[in-house]
Structures are given as C-alpha cells and as structure tokens.
Image (cartoon, rainbow, N blue to C red; front, top):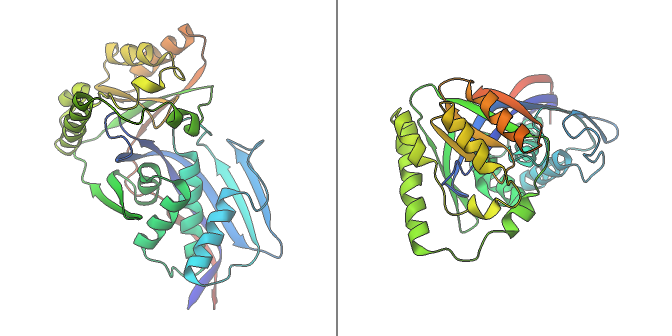
Length: 307
C-alpha cells in the first residue's frame, strides 16, 4: 500500500453547544491551526502561535498521542515523528483547541499510514480522546453537526446549512478550564428548563437550515449550561446584550467559554462586544468569520512510499 513521509493538515476551530444544543451541536468555523507531521529519526515537536510557551514537546503532546492511537488502532507502526504546529486557535477559550489537535493528529496519522481507517473509526477514536463529540466531530467533518454518543459510538449527521452565515467571535484575554466549567453544572435540571432547551435546539437547526436569521434570537437561548457558568464569565450578559443591540441575530457562549459568539449580518457588533468586555476590565480579540464546510483536511502530501 502507499503511505506518506510527510503530510500537512489544516484544522478549523469549533463552536460547541451553540446555545441550547449542549453536547449535541457543533459548528466548524474558518479560523485554523495548521500542523505538519513527518517521519523522522527521532521525535521532535515545534509549536508556534497559540500555546507556543505551554504545549508539551514530548510524548504528552496531544498530536503525538493521537497519532500513536491511530497507529495502534490500524495495527501499524509510525515510528518517530517530527510535528510542527502553527496554532491560531487559542487555548482554553471555548474554540476547540484540544479537538483541533486531536482531529489534526488523527487525519495526519491516518494519511501517513495510507488511510487504513474509515471516518467512523476516526471519529470514535477522536471522541474517545476528547471525551465528548460536539467539538471533535465538526473539527473532523466540518459544517454544522448534530451528534451524540450511543454505546461508545459517535452518532452524527452533518446538517445542510442554507444561506451565508457570518460569525463574530469576541475572544477574551482570559482562560476558562473546561473541567471547571463542567464542574459547575448541576446533576439535574428543572423539567421546564429541559423542555425550553429542546424547543430552542430544534428551532436553531430549523433557522440555520431554512435561512431564517429572524429565529436566532430565540433559538440561541439556553437554560442548561450558560446560567451555571456565569461565575466564570461574569460579563456574559453584558456582552450578549451589546451584540444584540448592535444588530446580532443571536448570541451564545462558545463551548464552555469564555469566548462569546454571535450570528450577525456583518462584523459591526464586534466593536460593541469589545466595548462591553472593556467595561468589565477584560481585553479581547475580535474575529469575524464564516462556517468552514470541510473540517480537517490534508493540504499537502510529500514523498509517497510503499509499505
């Protein structure tokens, strides 16, 4: 079979939950990490951009760990690897940085081995490493994804989005631990709140598939996770109100935060979101982007070999 010596993979950031779709909805956006993985005489990791001063350079590196999992699953050997990560997705900001590393490592390792594993196996493996499917699934397949775990398997469907959707991301210069954000969630919720979220999640999918921005104000409301995470993002309501006041269709916490994401007709609401955060004493980066329809993909292959 034909394998590769070197491969470069581009991986999008992701917005999980989208308000009411807790652990069930995820969206890939055009904001990327790029990683190159190549066969080498010894293991080596180079990181530039986000996390360059913090990400491990040894076997604890998530790209390396994922690549090894793929090789074991395929029953193959990769040998030492040289990994070069060029990261735009910031760490611990609710934009799927760990999912991007896992998705990128998964696609890169599978390509280096000659693509022995089908997509379903890659998704199950990646979700096993990430712990939940709503970031890693859109990172791998792109677009808007509905997903859940069923007996350890990822059940998912890519949803056909109609219209051109612009997203404005207010990315604060502070971090939130996903583990801490999950610790704040209750074990049970009131039945009316569960009903509230079921209706909003269904309405959200209908809005995005039917090109109905007028529905997004209601469709992005949530009672399952955002209210409980306010201690970690005390400025959330102020930023959401500012975005809506500046014309955003719908606003939500991205993943576990602290990034706030808005569906909007243009990037104008970004300035209002930035002002609201500044009023709370928090600096932020504003990114105006769109849906990424492809997910993690190989953008360059080098030196095929026979194995």
